[in-house]
Amino acid sequence: MIIAGEASGDIHGARLVSAMKSRNNDLYFCGIGGDALRAAGVKIIQDASTLAVVGITEVFSKVSSLVKGMAGSKRLLKNLKPGLLILIDFPDFNLKVAAAAKKLGIPVLYYISPQVWAWRQGRVKKIKELVNHLVVILPFEEEFFKKHGVPVSYVGHPLLDGDLPPVNLKEKKDTPVIGLLPGSRDSEITRHLPVMLEAASLIIKKMNGIKIAVSLAPTVKREYVEKIIGKHFAYDYDIISGGAAQILKICSLVVAASGTVTLEAAIAGVPMVIIYKVSPVSYRFGKAMIKVPNICLVNLIAGREIVPELIQERATPANIADEVLRILGDSDKIESMRNELIGIRNLLGGSGASGRVADIAMSMLADS
Image (tube, rainbow, N blue to C red; front, side, top):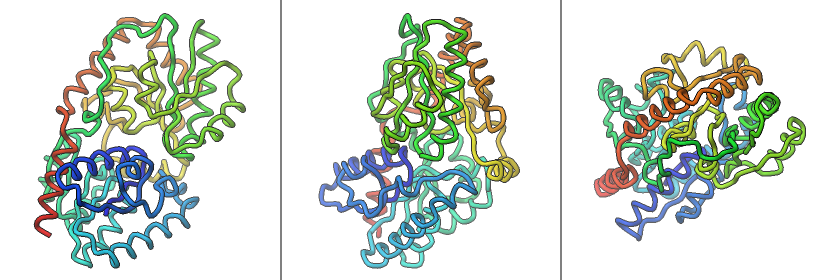
């Protein structure tokens, strides 16, 4: 049984399922996920798009779906008794499922750890209690969890298992293309896309020949994005579907919601400005609990701020436009940022993360 509650986890989970099936094609998979896991042959009992949410107050809009998903997961565990439960990120939901699995004696492999090193570190005790083996994908995570006595393996980042974009340190087009990557959840689109579009309008007024492209995540309906654009943007634009990799191929710079996509941009060597907004209540709670100086994965891995972060009240159209124009107006700054981003790519390890996780999972299956 496998549970991936978000778009990036769906893709990483699909690669893991394929790697496990290459070792034993008779394996049967079921659980919660999206199109990628479904295409990999997983029987989906509930689509992940009905569950994905960020923030404390934002969760209320998804309560009925979350309750349904939790009940369905517990029922499936009890009736099916799978040989292994694989959980991917999505901690508030998945740790509750892990507790149900432990009561039933079902081993748990947690792939892509909750970011407890950043906030709510008390969850480490729960992970140690409920998870048989934790697999981490960022280079500094293994030492943190070992220090807390959690059985852990570092496998490298699964983004490097895909077809990596060629590194191009030169300008991609005579006409700069700015990509807007507002997120993979409806709530993220609602909060981020209007601000990004208003910033894009300011940029176009100050810099001639700019083109705007908006990324459409697989979990978001095109009509939803088009409706927001119609309200907030009066210029020509392109909507690019097929995931972040497609829009990164054409962009000189992106304005992106903080998340896995920032690592995708780093791997592609694309300069970026990071933003993120949640409800005021969620922000106050989160700020009180966060233990790291940055929220962007690129900056966390670098150990310093190499791409600008505009969080909450700082994520205004004017601030975003100023940062974009500052970067695009300085060729030395662009080259320096691209080189630093390629350094992040090198820190993430080589390819093969999915295969290494598959080996751990097959070993756990053999022991169950």
